[in-house]
Length: 348
Ligand SMILES: Nc1nc2c(ncn2[C@@H]2O[C@H](COP(=O)(O)OP(=O)(O)OP(=O)(O)O)[C@@H](O)[C@H]2O)c(=O)[nH]1
Ligand SMILES: [Mg+2]
Image (tube, rainbow, N blue to C red):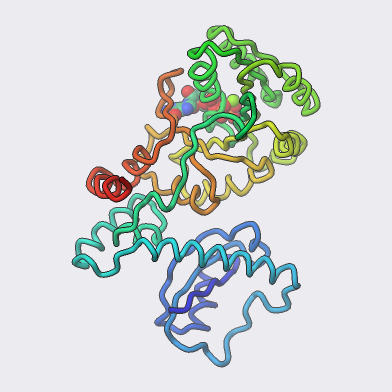
């Protein structure tokens, strides 16, 4: 089967392009917002599979007139797509089980908002472990202390989670920790953090500018943990956070976790992740695990962006409602008990 990506401003328009070229029998493999490298080709990407020969007079594809740079990016994206697909297919035991059981399992995973391609591979016997990584460590690898920044959209749970982490990893292990609040956008935001830090007995400084943040990181170099809280930037505020994002993205010591609510709509989550690329987060941290029953989107994004999942926040209680991400926990959320047992068995 030949696979081909089509890009356009809407999923429907991209599908029309694909059907024009590949014919009505072409099979939709998946649809999603375009990756940053291919965004210039259209906001959405659909991947179609077909056995039919190419239409000799196809509608002009959107890539026509592409520059060498565009072509290079297209090739890089195609390579990634092929790698993803081969991962899906290599783990699958095709037709090894009765179709009805397999499709039932697949439908269950898709209902849990898992990407149809992953759902199909897992339903056919691939291990879910193939599709995501976990990394519940704090700090950059090889660094002798942990400097951790939490970034993310307004109300995602950054401040609450930061305090949970500070209590869990600083206070409980009796290691010197410092909180830095770079959230000077909202009135009284730093006050909320300062009073929580005071209850825990952890120092808390407010830093007004990115330069002051860099200085404070240096000033607290003898602390084992430095936790940085940042403002929640909405879609229209991103420009205000550009300097902070640049500092955080370029600082060699900062381990940046993008905090996302697991209860977000999948398409919104993909958009927020795209917006927060300027911070170059290293890991994804999911909150509000207690508020949803569909967890596919969090795995889809970890897979697409090739970033590990660090922690899961499961409620409002400080510091209890926080868990280090593990394969078993995430596998259980995505597949539910029936398939989880299978997956765990396969992974062992
Ligand atoms: N149910 C639930 N609520 C949570 C969780 N994490 C945080 N919250 C709640 O979400 C609300 C917002 O949390 P904050 O930590 O202030 O969020 P934030 O990202 O710092 O918000 P801004 O600073 O305004 O961008 C608070 O009421 C928290 O108690 C979670 O895992 N589950
Ligand atoms: Mg906050």
